[in-house]
Length: 345
Image 1: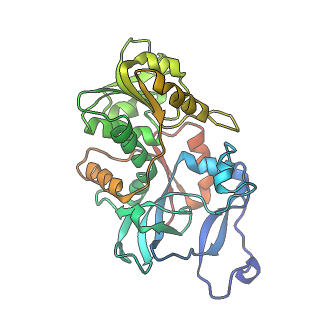
Image 2: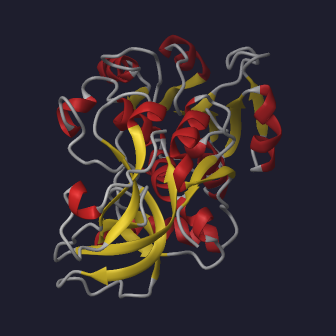
């Protein structure tokens, strides 16, 4: 990572007297270790429906890597063709409200919150009030920061798209990652019989989260045992559609959350597109979805957490200065659960 910008504020384009903060910034797409750097920048200004949060911790999700690298290329259509429009990465946030906009009735300054923000790899971040919820009391800030993006994805994938019901058989491909560790626990809370798929080193973690059965994909294919599932949640996998369809019941549901390849144009999205195209012509329901960022579902996750049914699985915590290392650790596939950035005490 590049060194901190130590230029005087007036020479760095900062107005005299403007409040500054430490943040990880990016001015071009590329490898995290090359394009991310620590810099002193102005604190963000908030609108009438926004909240300024003093960040205590921020989660690292796969989307952070996509926006840092600018891959696959369609990402740049939404976030900037030649360079990212917003300089600071990070969505997951847990912290303390510093200030609120004129139309915000909740939260209030001093409240502990968690949710989705803009540019959370910084000491302060802008957040829409309707994307925040009270921080679960039984969680630390680091644990709370692990929840929003991955927890919302797991909850909505299972409840709204796979429509998991008590007693159903569910297969989770990628059960040991950020979304997967939440999905195993939420599926068990919904009453499903869960089979998780992961590598050898992560079998114990997935089993400890409550999975009824764990498949080590380095030793066994998902179809080898001849089991059929009412639903498959495929998180970041690249299993061929034909293989997944063979393990689904005739009326089963496949929900693709992600699919990572080295493709610079589609990056695995082609499999989701093929699933959507095939779905109308077969008895099985095949497709994917984009998660919704809202405080209603953050509240649902809080209920699971406070009841003890769901606990964030954190693999490792990094300081703000080591964001590139945190992203690299996540993309290398070594993480068992979530990677978190500790921003402030």
